[in-house]
Image (cartoon, rainbow, N blue to C red; front, side, top):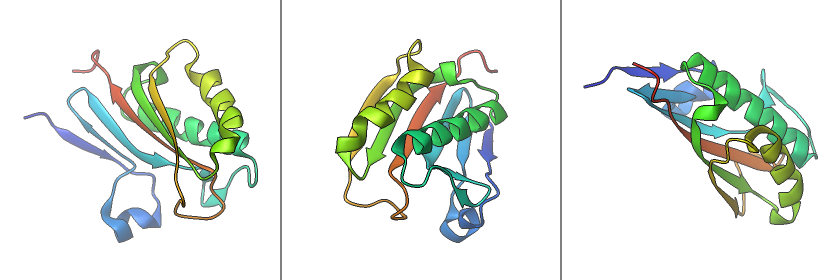
Length: 131
């Protein structure tokens, strides 16, 4: 069996809810949903483009901590409170993934964990170069 590595964000919610920022087993990395919270503060309040950029930046950092890169992402799932904002979210996503082109789904949901969030992004990474 492959070694399991839990990746922590340091958030107080990890202990309360019982989750990790990410989990790596073998060459597979799964990250928890990612919002625009950096150091306990909301980034891009009222701006879905900036929130998406922030979430994707956090995803990049988490992948790096797991020994992977953004190019290793094979799927993204974007949950939005207001699908009419898809172009702003899609623009930020496209700036990061235009050459990688992972499988992607964008969905509208009725609520996210906080009313301040416009977007929550999930991804799957397969890093075949990792031992």
